[in-house]
Length: 167
Length: 352
Image (cartoon, rainbow over all chains, first blue to last red; front, side, top):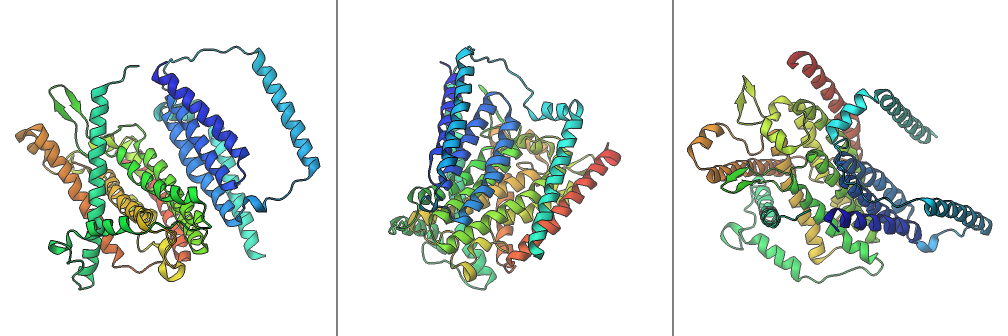
């Protein structure tokens, strides 16, 4: 096994176990920390794919900004394991059934699929120069439309924030 | 894939030298800070341990190491320990992408004075800076103390707000350099004067530099933006419950951050290891001596910037929290955007 495969399996195990940690840990702060570790594992996968730009943007945007805000909210609300609200039994049963169905579907899909070996052909599309050229030539319309979407979300957030201030 | 032993040894050596160097400089930055404060307030400053108090940092370090280690009863133990560790880790991680000197061409290959020349060097710095908040936030929350929590939330919101303006101010500069690699940015600033204009980015992006510098002050939690450790409102700040070397690590990480960010500012805006008439010097001395001179030039710039940070700290009073937020969101971000538009117009119509 080469260093490539070792790091691939290490990152995969890390991503999966940290993702499990997110839903299994009782303390919400620990959940957020596990989620950050998951993002790091996924960024590691991006680096293995030679997509350095995606890897670092994943860290800046998700681990550096969004998760900080999550942590912010959780800390201010001071959620602890003992203050966790008791969930309705009906909700629990519904959750178990829907989750179990999803598991069955995934298992059925996995059973019929074949395992392909890791392919190590190098690509350069993830490097910032190529990615930028592709985004601003081939996909310029979807790119600009998604930026309009972000702008409207931002304006919406400002409007909601203002409304609370005046009331 | 074959592992190159010589390559690993070279990198480990370089990393150790940079790490020890930044620790040493951070250590003496604490001494310099107290001396600068003393000079500006017409005092003598530390002068008991050694000549001019030069052993004072060692004495402080020893004191912190030998103090009793207290972990509060109601704290979240693991996160309480993780906080200072993260602060220290993110402080030193940025040094990996700073080019400390030019390549040295030896008999058997080229020795690079940069740990990793990744083509997204600036984004790496932003990534690490944005992670730097976690050390403060986790430490403050895990202490289970209201003042620590308030202070860590202040620190986090301040860091997030100023990261935006920081990124925007650099976008304008990146439009001129056309590269995200720190090495390329430094090489474009070769020498001092070329083609009838200065080569250093400071002269090409003065407004961007001022915005970046202001944001650096805020990111470093230094006066006039040291609200996270505002004693008059928050007792002491996010490290109130910390004692012994854990407190030491928080304080020390701040000074390492100061050193590394001064190095980044010198690299981005003041030509890094370049200095005037460097081609003439390169022609007359041997390559290793030339590399040493280049490293010295970079360190001189870094020390000047550190001193500037200190002068500002002891000159300006602390901002109020709403003033800080207003400055960040309503002045710096629009200024950075205007700077970006002007730079774009100049590149499009003037320089071409």
